[in-house]
Image (cartoon, rainbow, N blue to C red; front, side, top):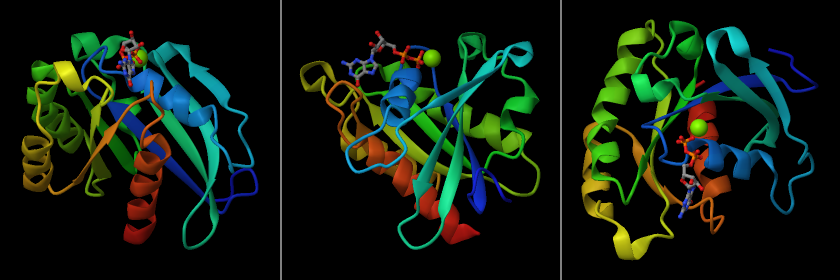
Length: 183
Ligand code: GDP
Ligand code: MG
């Protein structure tokens, strides 16, 4: 699909419990990082369905530029009442938990199931993200058990911190590379 001079447009959603840091992770990513030519984030709101998305273009490792449409929930994840339109045509999902919040880790399977139940035959590519990795002294989910969960769900796992800007770009590029690979 042609979009803003880009050959492809990828629609990606961030999902996970409230307060795990999804919006912070997204804002950190769209605010740009060194070496990225287009740091201007574009916020486009869809107030009727209570979600927001940001756009950013990205040069894929092996190939074209893509426009990323990054969808964020606007608080409704607290009530688990995310509309179907949020998931429509999503090709990638970051499943985010907080490494200091055990419940947010335990809920990852539920978020995964909800996406799988909502999607048609084309299932998106997932990446499991253990966020707030800067909080090592209070973490209560080990990297090993997160790796095991990711493997059992058929996805990769990565730890990120918006505070320290750790692995933020890498998480999105890992996901987009996997999406491109699956095209
Ligand atoms: P959301 O509800 O999942 O969108 O979470 P928010 O992005 O609103 O963040 C929830 C809280 O976690 C806020 O107080 C953030 O400042 C904090 N937070 C987000 N990312 C990080 C991080 O990487 N490290 C730490 N220590 N706090 C974070
Ligand atoms: Mg949020």
